[in-house]
Amino acid sequence: MIEEFQVDMHQRDQETIVPGLTPGTTRILRRKPFYAAEVVLKDIDLRTVLATIVEPLKQSVPVTSPPLRSNYRSRTDLPIMDSSSTWNDSDDFVEMDWSSSTVPTVHFLPVMACPRFTYFKRNSSALGNGSSKFGAEGSHRCLLGEEPCE
Image 1 (cartoon, one colour):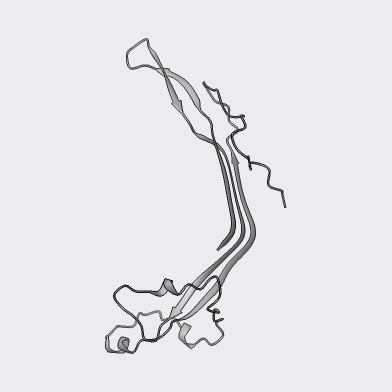
Image 2 (cartoon, one colour; image 1 turned 60 degrees about the vertical axis):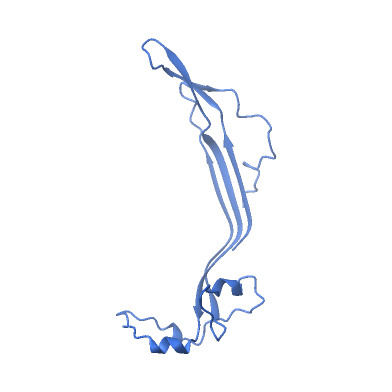
């Protein structure tokens, strides 16, 4: 779950003169590469889901046990998620061609929490043999470099 997600990506219209198809001619190659980007994620909460459904019909299906067996069924210390939690959506456990007679027991186990993650990239290389008519004009509310450094 991510509380806030912001992204700002800048493209630059670039023109480069390249050899033409016939000898002695040139043509203009136009590209719009991304030359700067900033991604900001706030209040990241990553969890794994463990849901168990008691289903009596499962006992009638013969299944060979895998060599490595999990012991999650014997654990009693797993936190149970409140049904009113924003993490809990009962539609996540709906099968189109089957319905269970019981409600699943759902555990959302924390994996990682991060208050803020910022990724910033700017291509500071020169335009090479090309030129740009654009790149510094005000076209939107720019977020690049405006986020506070914490």
